[in-house]
Amino acid sequence: MQANIQKSYLSKRAAELKPSGIRKFFDIVATMKDVISLGIGEPDFTTPKPILDAGIRSLTNGETHYTSNSGKIELRQGIADNLKRLYNVNYDPATEIIATVGVSEALYLTFNALLDPGDEVIIPTPCFVSYQAEVYLAGGIPVEIPSRRENNFSVDPADIRKAITPRTKVIFIGYPSNPTGAVAERETMIEIAKIAEEFDLMVVSDEIYDRLVYGFEHVCFPALGESLKRRTVLLGGFSKSHAMTGWRIGYAAAPAEIIAGLVRIHQYTIMSAPTTAQDAAIEALKSGEPHVEEMRSEYNRRRKLIVGGLNRLGLDTFEPRGAFYAFPNIQASGMDDESFAEKLLQEERVAVVPGSAFGMGGEGFVRCSYATSYEKIEEALRRMEKFMERHG
Image (cartoon, rainbow, N blue to C red; front, top):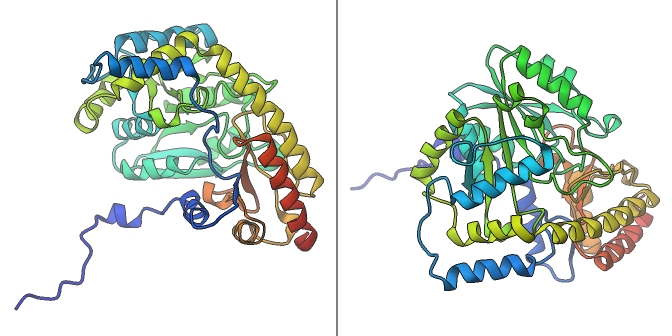
């Protein structure tokens, strides 16, 4: 007689991994009608036509086979040229760049290549939900240091210094920030650079929103100096700037010995990034700039609308300098961020994401994405005004 086995075959790591706080609300939204979503973090624009056409040409020309593990050399050369043009930082496309399945895969590869079990990664929060999870999955320990509203959610380098232990191996930074829209100033980045050199730490810099800044300078971390470039893994991609989320194409740039480690893991898990997406990304680098500027200008218009509107409702919102998120304080409602998001969705059909989903320091805030149309943002603000009249 077969024994009644009451156990899980999941690994401890998989079983203990926290579900994404973002997905919880998307699942609820999917069951409702007439919802205006300020929750999703992806452009509402369609990929620009020249890029679409390049992807179609790639398919009709029979480009349906694997590429090099690192990606097409034309793409890697284009990425290198773009980084040189924008930030005057030099990468060898043959050995220092890998094309990945979005920045998500680049994160996975990077932490698995860098971390041994028990290694600590300092992560300023609130931050994108994947960062701590990817460190954990690689066997590392995420060490959260909350940033603060009074610093416009830019990390205080002194807090990084305090968090360093003998097990610290990596400082992670992600600016412009998802979920806050914060952009780190050059002086802050220079202080982080000094700390990394003093303690001989690697830096992983997720700069996926680098092209979406508004009247402010984006500081490319490895461009701060050759010694910094040698200890930095730079992550970037096309999803946000070129409205290419579904194409799943990103990259990592780093010293050759680090990239070689990423490639070793990548070749066993992915083989190569999608060929069609690589061809589309090559075109994005060639002709995408006017479209990037057009989209950035429209995001800026929406940014002004939503920040002004939220502040008028009594939801204190600092001015986001990058990405496409506003991060209002919802204290005036008398609710915590989870309750606020749930009630707003149920009562007014407006979806936002609780700030606590993004780690320490996010409590009492919600993330509102303005990657949706101007008219929908206007309607969302009208609905939120009615909500605050009842609860403010």
